[in-house]
Amino acid sequence: MTDFFLKRLSFNIVANDFTVAGKSSSAIKNFLKSMGLEASVVRRIAIISYEAEINIVIHSYGGKLHCDLYEDKITIISEDTGPGIANIDLALTEGYSTAPESVRELGFGAGMGLPNMKNYSDDFEIKSSSEGTFIKISVFV
Amino acid sequence: MIISEFAKQLNLNPLFESSKNINVEGVYIGDLLSIVMSKAKQNFVWITIQTHINIVAVAELLELSCIIVVENMEVELETVNKAKELDIPILKTNKSAYEVACMLHDSGIK
Image 1 (cartoon, rainbow over the protein chains, first blue to last red):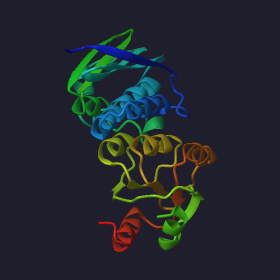
Image 2 (tube, one colour):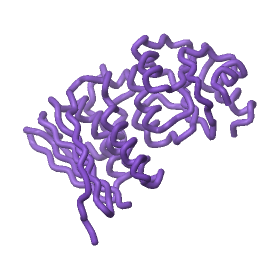
Image 3 (spheres, each protein chain N blue to C red):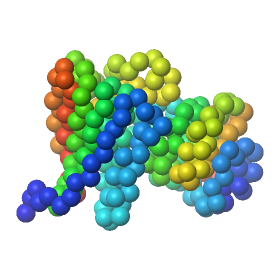
Image 4 (cartoon, rainbow over the protein chains, first blue to last red):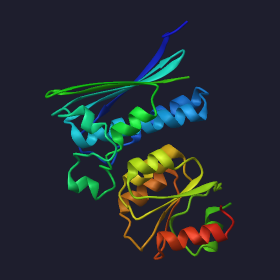
């Protein structure tokens, strides 16, 4: 039996609010831990959801983060309204960043956000236009 | 180990001492949050010069032992408050990342 859907957690992510950035990822992590998922899977999802959440905070006008729990996988969906990604191939290159200097000084904008999401996933899908970005990432359990 | 003992042993200034026991299984030094997210692991000590509130979110997500802010960087009050809220020990020192890493190594953390 594959793709058997069990539950969805959803969070609103506010642009430019670094004081709560990471809170949704933390809620996702704690939920998955409480479900008894393997620590390595929880760690991968924590990395993926944090990067997705931070990207919405830095690069978009705001968006949503969803965590879908299936019988055989965990899927993180990030959807935002915003300027979108001009060149997805470049954005997936390690070290490439369009983050402004003001946030780089705080340790963001290493150019590892999307590469981390892709590297820690088993399935990675991204669509972007001038209206926003949609990313769907799965980790098999 | 109790965090106050750990701080005393390494001569670190605790900005927030959690009452929980910490278990140290490794050390990561880094200032770029995405790289720390990818490389640091549960029960690691994180040495950094970053002081922004989001370092606490990173430490909480990775379940790090504690954050050590080096080079006497001024840590924002909102960062310390967030550390209290999420129960993440945060310590400070005027030493460099290298000096702290050497002290951790000498204390038996390999």
